[in-house]
Amino acid sequence: MLIAIVAWLCSGLGSGLGSGPALWAQASDSQTGDPNKSWTATTNSHRENSDPMRTIESRTQSGNRTLDRQSVQRRGSDGHFEPYQDIEKETVQLDAATVRTTTRTFGRDADGVKTLVEVIEEEKHTLPGGKSKVVRATSDPDANGNLRLVQRRIEETQKTGKDVEETKTTVMLPSVNGGLVPAVKVQERREQGANGTVASQKTTLLPDGAGNWQVGEIRRTTTRQEGDNRSAEEQVSIPDSEGKLDEVSRTVSDEAATASGEKSSTVETYSISVPGSVGDGSLHLVKRATTARIPSSTGPQTIKQQVVQANPGDPGSGLRVTILTTDAVRPSTSGEQATQTVQVRDANGSFPVVSVDTTKSDNIHAIRVQIAPPEVKK
Image (tube, rainbow, N blue to C red; front, side, top):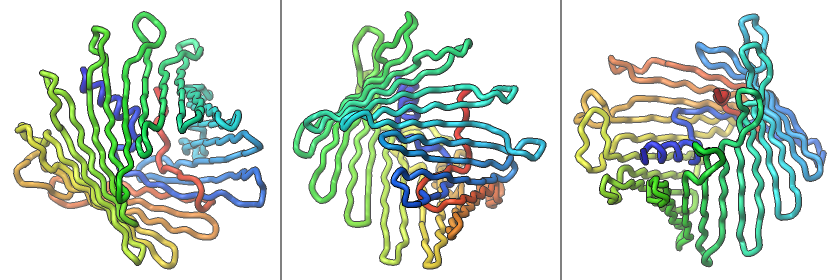
């Protein structure tokens, strides 16, 4: 039960990184000299063996109010683009210390009618002494279309020392008796050290059913920055059946840049769980992802990634290449085009192409557009 809740916490409240390779195209803020900085960008994308998609994004800024709209459309059986998902994000600077953001997500029902599927209301307060407080409320419509509060998240951050910052987060979820009750607490401490080092510890606390809070997970992360080179190490520990903390995974990453502008990164994942084998309680290397970003003086940029993983059928044979991904981004005066090719190892050891995604944007560099639309909440 504890592991399941922690897993949910990491997926829903963590960094938000996807589980698979994603292609992003850069579009741009069309600078027209207007102090309100309004713009519109259109991105067309096509994933092999799926319907073409079109994303229309816009920003309207006036005074203390900014409205961002994203409309995702997909080509229907009649060849015309039809609405798929709409997201409206309104940001209002209420005063010098308060920002309110409201995000509404709309989907389409079986008849194609636009329906509200989620509302997220966030208010951030900047307090004296370097303190801040963020309250985020998530509401979903019920069967009758009435909004009901399904989650409230409260984050309070303050400096406890010259180079130390602490954040306390409480996540409240619906209870069986109605209303919201604390379901998860997270305590994070970050300390700036010498030579560009930052150390943090994030402790997740879960209720034990008797009104007490107990540790469900501890994540310790250390990052180091030296010029354009960066390294990081994260250790994850969870309690065993007797409450003793055991390290269950470790991630080590390194990023480096050369004078010519090339960038490379390596991420290694160690785990006590090795696919296809019975764990011995020790950490083993189960995955390594290497990425190379190769710029060009003419503008195009190529990003190549290789993923090696343990073979579930023969875990003792070590790691083998399983996925090859190539991203090619070509900017131009009229916009940008990006192509992502994914190859996956088959049973014969070959690497056939399993998907080719293309994205074309009529803008150059201010917004990030993901090829595939986010999944509409069911």
